Length: 178
Image 1 (cartoon, rainbow, N blue to C red):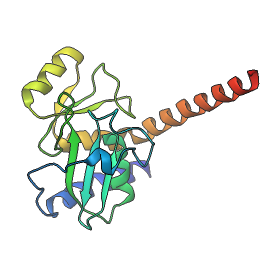
Image 2: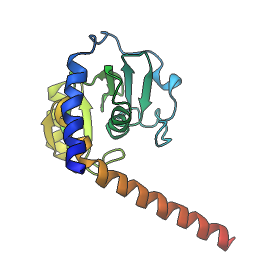
Image 3: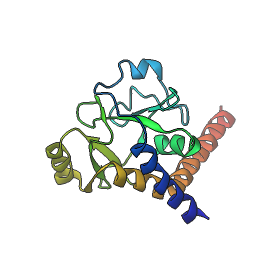
């Protein structure tokens, strides 16, 4: 069932991108003001400006997330909406760049945002290659990074649940000890 779900998403995402209207040349202004926190996990998008995402759907709705992980969840939940624009934070400059034109680095030694296998976006191939030289990983395009996000979804969601469970337990113990 899991393989079917991932396969279906991987088939539908490229079709949605192919048949959606062209992306505007300029990134949206004030995306962090419009969406200061990720609606899925609550993370501060200004703090995670280097990994943030901003999606504009074909019905005019938007999603401002903290990472490709949360963007992938939103695209899966909103399967009937076509993403018209997918903007992502450039790892180095923190500016929004076109996610489909970005040079992505998947994996490496640097822990990702909401994921064990990192997915970082860069505006230039040189910047991505420099990062790979320092931290490892492999060069990818948007399709490869999105596929990795969907493939990692179960493991990453489980990791997040465990971390939050431990945090709640720790908070409970701290209250009990007060």
